Length: 379
Length: 137
Image (cartoon, rainbow over all chains, first blue to last red):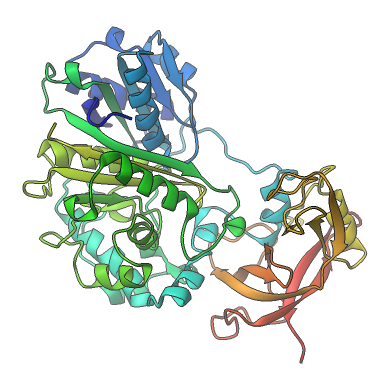
């Protein structure tokens, strides 16, 4: 795809984040969409492309009163929105639509109007995983981590430091759910969820949403906010069964999506000013740093524990506080994208001074899918 | 009131041979007749070379512990926490999710790469699950 041909011209989260008992999941989508449309200075009738996950594009189009000429219902978990950005950029370039609205929302905490998720007993997961006691992401997502630690020589303290650094970032974000400082000892003494992970190494469960508006770079300069260009993108999937990953030392979906985006962007790792790696659980930033090629996996734990991803560090990462401390409604990818856009606009609460390139990497399911978007504010 | 039951697998035409096998005390895998790839979960073609010429065979039941969690909360229906959810690597190559029985459910007792052997746990007249326990000797 052509670099910088498409830009984000509207971006917003729901008016509230956290616990929102007065809105259904569908209304959270609309709340985010209306905020993004206002941010872009557009009318609903200007939107001719719609992408969303879990909820269907027809549901969102109907509820908002939009008549699209292009839709994308790709729903591969929390990174679906990274894939939507990629697909929307291609569609705009191909002339299938002009202005795309991507929405996410989830009533993850209040569970109002939330669609049921169930594993059929005759699916492969229902036959070959569910009978062995997996029960929700906390019991599944950490299954690879002990092998990763053994292979790469990563310590429990290093993985605990992921949560500590992200809490530091969250403290700088007024909208973050958890802001009180924590130490490595606090993390390692917190309530056990699924050994080796404790509650402070697991994502939050909250309500909220977000929306993005994309259009061609040629039109982007006429919008009220600084355009944020799409420099490169990548995507892949591996397997819905965590037990069937090719290896636990790495994520195959990450190693396809991440490097594809870097090649497309034509940048080197040293060019990256700001990084978001979807942290549903504390090991994901380690997998991401290694699989995206920032460093060998053996160095990822030490890199974070040594403070390199903190404010003022070499590679500021998860600057909103991440899924561990900012918010996590169930499909966090949209919030990572929102933070990358804020950083590229120069308006993030914990702004990285002078940041020009932001890499935003998402995961879907339990390493089942992956999407990477590289943004820049320079054309 | 009865305890909530453990999730029970429901076989499909492609997986029936696996679940028939566990009932008779066999752990069954499939091997490609063309490229010799051994694979799991079951399907009537080779996921490596796409050949439909595949054979079912009885695996040795020997495995090693690849990785695991010890789940504390929330516990799945029919399970008493803490319990380990493991991924074992079979001697023939494929990996599968299972539980480790006859072993304390602790990080000290559950050592990565420890040798395991298959055991069979009958849930009801239709379903027997493959489980693994520390290998003897």
